[in-house]
Length: 245
Figure (spheres, rainbow, N blue to C red):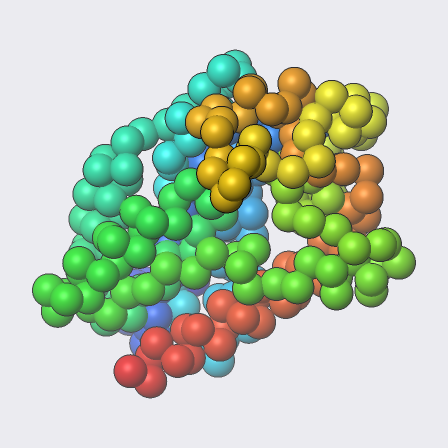
């Protein structure tokens, strides 16, 4: 059930098993991918997981802005502080507790991970409901998805093959295909500037000119379909496990 398009009586009369809250980011993903990439991915995976779960799952509206100050040098990027995201997600999850006592926060952005874990822990410890975070790209084997699509080993990157592959499957019209080579050539092969286990860079612009990390030309739509199917199945598994607790 899509919460935004449902009526309050639809929700009242439904036998709701759990809820999912997609949380993304509005930040640069190179010249070829939209600023809303992380939000689109969080919503796509949330919907896939809800569809794969046996019970009725409410899909809440996506939180579109996250912790993304590291991309501030690139136009259009929006961000909030960790404290703001924690408080906002905390209060949204507590309001979902009126609908169900199980909420999974579906995350699409690496910068949100710590704050979402803290927010869901607080809600759970207070007893309002049982809430856990689920970061979609941690649930998939990117290499396996690439091999299935006939592509060599890939890394997550940023606006790289993994995220671009999923976009090509779910939102193909939003990928600027004529800019993918530029994204690769002016990007970086890996995230950050590392010395003795320390990342010396705070902002993405310090190591990638295009904003991209990884090769977006190496992520076909077939790979994106496998990623979505795998992430959706993993989310459904988490929903079942959370329900059983």
